[in-house]
Length: 160
Image 1 (cartoon, rainbow, N blue to C red):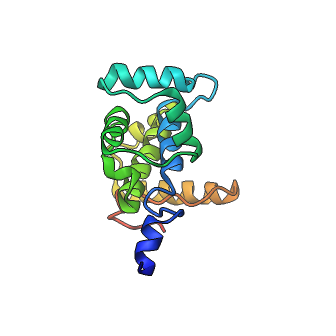
Image 2 (cartoon, helix red, strand yellow):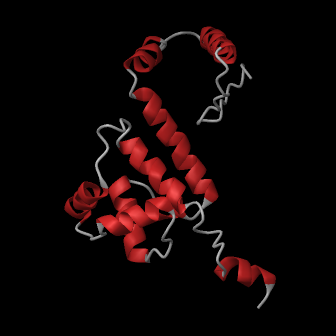
């Protein structure tokens, strides 16, 4: 067997090695408060109700912990439908990064103060918006927070 084939079909399974991380990221995005996050039995029931597909609670737990990675295309479609992501999210790094950027934005917009800041900035001039972005970036540095890349690519690019 060629090296590439053994890597694809061997124990490492590069296509699926991050499956558990991606599944957990989706669960956390939908249920951000760990105290209100459903158990796997309830999550399996919610998936069944929403999609008509069946994935057992035990199997969900095994997928989320990385103990199982043998997902069928049908199960992949069910999970993708329930979480509102393309099936490629679980298998493709580029798609995963794009969806994760959207999930980060969704998470930030759940905070009323962040929403208010965004809504109140509408109508300000581009130079004023750039000044605010510079101030926010500096505040993040002071608080030792990581850089946040603009999901839209920061087309104006004034503050980097």
